[in-house]
Length: 122
Figure (cartoon, rainbow, N blue to C red):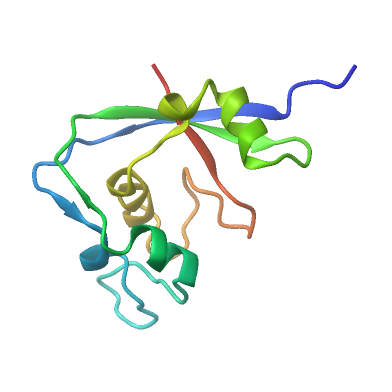
């Protein structure tokens, strides 16, 4: 019998937001500025799905990372995380994590070309 498809990793406490988060103001192409996050590509799907997204301010959260142990589709991963509500992370939280590794430093996010899986850890 196969084991779990997700291996739990570290947790990280994400600070609250105090202003609305507007994705197109934050997720911008940038390969030169030392003050901003280096973003060399924003795919068409991201633009279609999220570029005009606005999020209301949110309180602090604790997120847990996971390492995928086997190939799995989105539905399987979401189910293993406990459903959509538990698996969903805000763009503001993702951007907060990116800001802490804006030059590719080691940290909570994988920077080795692998994807990142997170859930709301409560």
